[in-house]
Image 1 (tube, one colour):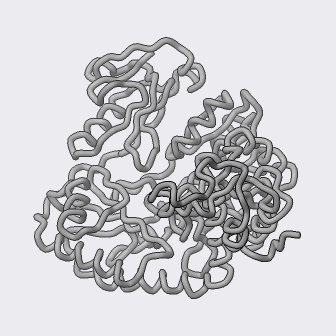
Image 2: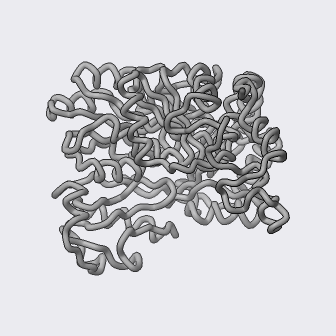
Length: 477
């Protein structure tokens, strides 16, 4: 009989050395076959065999582990996922809607939301979040903007918002959930960047206890778990059943037990040592803040001399995000990112036209953050101050001509960007990361759209086109 009190990793280490694998995978845990297999821990890489449960219909060790996660996060049901938050978002949209339903989508949602909309053939209405001109970042999603949209579109079934944003801005999910439910709709929160929220007094503003129907987390973004590991939290039994059915569509039937062991171990670590680890992370960030108060030209959103109180359009802010603006300097975002990489051996998460995002996580140390602070101080002394440009909107509103599904099924042609004004896009166009599309299939290419493309290109940001051969042309209907 399997002892479910032990971790998945412990069970793998106990059984794999003594059993002959007449099952997948084909390396057969023979790490002498090739050097890379040992380095990738193939000696404990298995498929779903006796005693290790079945992920879509868990009833043993995986179910126990998911119950541990649900207890930690305070959710009704928690599900493990091995293809990232993308699989969770696709499954959640499928579970919460029927084909042809109406959805209200926050404009700054991740690419996976738009893909889910297309697959489910939803009628969608996009609403813009607020905008903070001082740092040129998307602000919080207004509950009243959502209420206004729900009144305008009373048949709405689903509302999707992103909180926290890539830059760390958190919306008032409790108020949004209250409004959404009062109008008979359901709420999905893409909280991919917030798996650490509400696990301590230092990082708050999470969506699970705020009333969202499904919340999706990327564990690997901020917590000590392997890339591609994610979890989803579902609020009711009926929605959980629908979510299981959707997971069987969008998630692999051969989940990696190395990834599942990583999720399980991460949850156990948070239960056992979370208080200490979150305090250490908080203290390291405080030390970073104290160190960067001397910055004169560069500045960091809600850190150092900046404060959340200076941003009235934020409901709350995730202190784990370090969004460094170059708006008062002659540097572009990609140039700052390049300096950090080449001169200081620091690889940032992302560069936009006039900013760099550095993500921190539970694994960061005071030493790491001191080195980043000192690098910024060094660059700040050498950079030339410059007058701010007129504030720009970095994400154009979507003028929709037809649904994504309709646009994807129509013939398309490729034309130069110079000729594309007023045409209907046949493709997704984005800067990745963060994976928020600037244009989508079925959207009209407007002057704002083209100016956003131009702004990024002029500052060295590469755009990703889903159909065009290069960035000088665009696929249109």
